[in-house]
Image 1 (cartoon, rainbow, N blue to C red):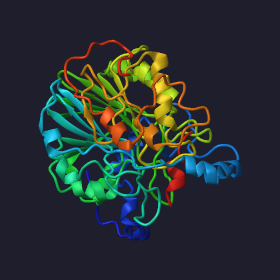
Image 2 (image 1 turned 60 degrees about the vertical axis):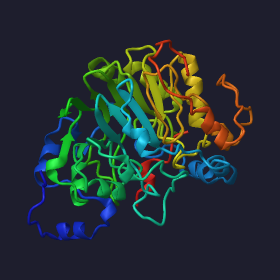
Image 3 (image 1 turned 135 degrees about the vertical axis):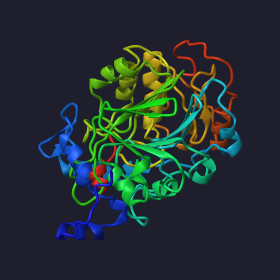
Image 4 (image 1 turned 90 degrees about the vertical axis):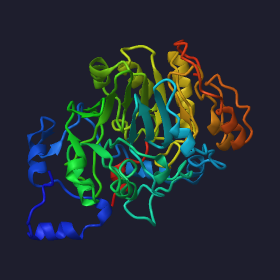
Length: 423
């Protein structure tokens, strides 16, 4: 479904002049399908619960906080972020438990599940921006070259913002045989960047597709979309549930907290692992990004109301997108997990781990390269003890073997909204 054709109207000619990074607007059959969606009304996609997309409150107050010199200092690490030297050999060995996750930084995760390889929101570019010379720049290198990742069965995209849908990464993956699972409308961008329509699985909320023995379902999220001058809300955003013969996983994409997590959990859970957005939050956009406490609440909802599985915090640490201190999402997640007696994984970028293993990476590695809060590192129950980035990485490099004991608790702000970062 290309939705192209021989349209040479002034509007079509203007679209042809737009920067490649802006992607493409849905047209033709794709646009007709969007208009038929039950989630599309009044000319735009709607959220499952009302959500303000842009900054709320005083823009002057927001500017004071966001551009405050001391605040900007807190939003960056003090030293080099440790990165696990992921190798081809690391990923060539099948996971002993049948499920392995490798956090690549931000929202990117390679999930090896029941003999299949799923790559969520891959961003290998240096900046999450439409332009290579401006915009948020990554704070740590990618763990390994994209070409070294090996074959991927399906690339899953949550929405079309620049920190989740990266032009150079997609163009590189377009040269492979992988399938792309994307929310409704996002396929227009990918086709412009060289992905064949035959390799697209474009889904509305609660629609599913089969990839081998996996079932991928686009589930609701509370967010928004847009890459160009006009945020038209014409492409959908989604979270994703992936079900295999033996395991179930969930990726939140970007979302504010909403009651629908309970419905997703009832329909597709409980999950062996969830990948939950816990960074880039702020009091100025409370509806579209979750705090760590809200992320934990979402995880518990997905598990039926109580602790279960393993939660991997994502959408933090790689890009400076928010007024909150750089390390705050990690600290907040630790505190929320202890309060809920919930197992969490805290890998450094690039560190593979198996959610079903007895031991999870659990060291607060960020403390070695972050400014100590005014009140110290209290509240988490974990001691600091890691004086260098190397020591922090080593503390998380325990072997991951053996079945899980199943005991809960073992191992165990909002970012500048994307609309403010698009041209």
